[in-house]
Amino acid sequence: MDPLVTIVVATKNSAKTVEKTMESISRLNYRNFEILVVDGNSTDDTLRIVDKFSSKYKIRVIEEKRKGRGIAYNRGVLESRGKYVAFLDSDAMVATPGWIDYAVSLMEKDEKIGVVFTKVFAPPDSSFMQKAIDAFLCKGFATANGAIYRREAVIKVGGFNVKMNYMQEDELLKKLTAAGYKYVVNTQDIIYHYHRNNLKSYIEQNIESAIGARMYREFTGESWVIKDGTMRVSAVLFVVLMSVSLAIFYPSLLLPFIGVIYLGILLKVNRETCEVYKWSKYTLGSPFLIFFSLLGYSIGFLTIKVDSGLNESDATIHPAV
Image (cartoon, rainbow, N blue to C red; front, side, top):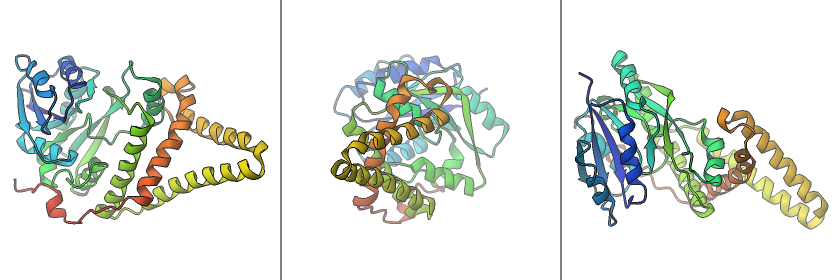
């Protein structure tokens, strides 16, 4: 019999999206799974919507009043009954039937595989902005959304860092590889996930991303985080200062300068993006959104105080659990 897989769906006032998430699970060709909803004290119709699927799936709902992605993820791991734990965001959808089956087949053959990541794309009905963001993010893979973990491995290394709201999956991956586990990226299956759809929330997301990166640096000691952050801040300052200087002293050169910067970013995006987006209309919007992502990241990197506490025992679940 195929091993049990627990699909963890963390929710918090997710009534607008969770129904599509739950419906999408029916696409799976893997049948031995349970769904564990970890709810952050929702005050909307989230749980009522989830309950509509109780006759269709094996569903358990657990209330988690403490805030934080890492806390919700760890609660899901600890309360899971499966050999493997799959994470699906409450605004994400299963796009292909083999998502779990492929990962389980790999991990059953190799006990040193601690996690199988899955490629995440914007859904077909996404807005122009969401697809323009996807055009330069689609090459990434280290996200908990769509990842399937070996439960015993996650517990062995202490689980997700509960003090981090961004890059907690990167920190967990570092602990897994240090413990001798490896990862695989599933490129034949897809998880759909909507990106931010307005500039304000997108900038705020990148501020949070910078905070997560700085905390990742505090917990892991990785020096590349500082170098990467410095490069991003430098790029924003260069563009802003040059634009202001040209506007004041050489206004006729301002538009050509912006055009050169735009073209350079556009060429880079088209060189590195996924095949579906190459030279599409969505890459035309990517340079503008990259600038705003760098702007938000720079704000978070330079101005927000990070308090990691550096208390590793409080930040993780304990292997003995």
